[in-house]
Image 1: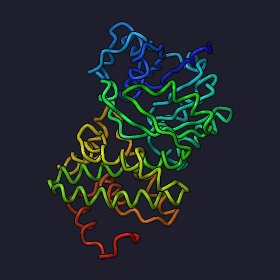
Image 2: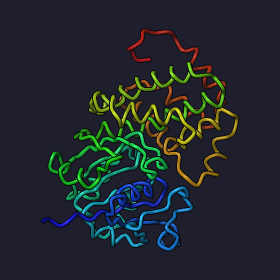
Image 3: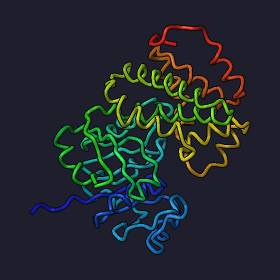
Image 4: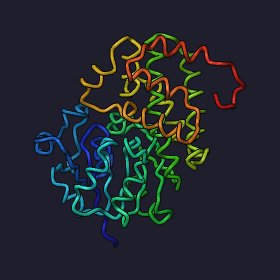
Length: 332
């Protein structure tokens, strides 16, 4: 009988803790790395992460640590840091496991690189996978049914290693080899969720939200295809599926940020007060710059950037509504 693969989760925020809880739900041992001082000890003694996921009583198989070297000795690591810190955390690891599963959604500021490109440069000997899809952390931790895309840069052989380790009766991965598509979907939908939150904050109604989701999805497709992503990937769980979830609920940090902007709060004060990260706020300006470079029209992304720069929500929405009329299916 072959030895069971050992698995670690890098990042003890809400999503990292939820993934560790899901992985440990069948009795498997999972090592969870926490950055914050004292958090690992608190998790080990109280069996709870009150800082980020207070609703979950953590499984006995979860052991927390603040030592990255312990993660480096494992077979598989799920990297669940904020996107802008993925590179620095990986560089701090003394070694890197064979399989790295990236669970951060965003684009690196400054370089404009996708997370799998960042990871590959740091860990060229590792096989890189991307896990993405419609996932609220508290629901995954509670064992509610969830389906995700698991895009494997190592192809079918990596899928055969990872899928038995990650799949659970209520957590179902679907195979893909499209790393770009998986990452584009997860990155762009965060920005669009801010826009949908603004619609909610301004009380513009369900019609407006549906229109924004539809036109935002068109932007996602254009941008993804310009980078070589498959339309089928973007129409799946990690694209349209994730977008529908995060554009429709205050459980989404990005949607909640947009809602507060629509209600008149300032972006500067909202970002300063947030302990948890609304990735879309960091992704929006990078995405806008990449779109300009690729000659891809993304007016909703542009509008979100204006809001984050201090623009009036009402004025930004008015500008979107008064743009020239065009045929559906053409660039806006």
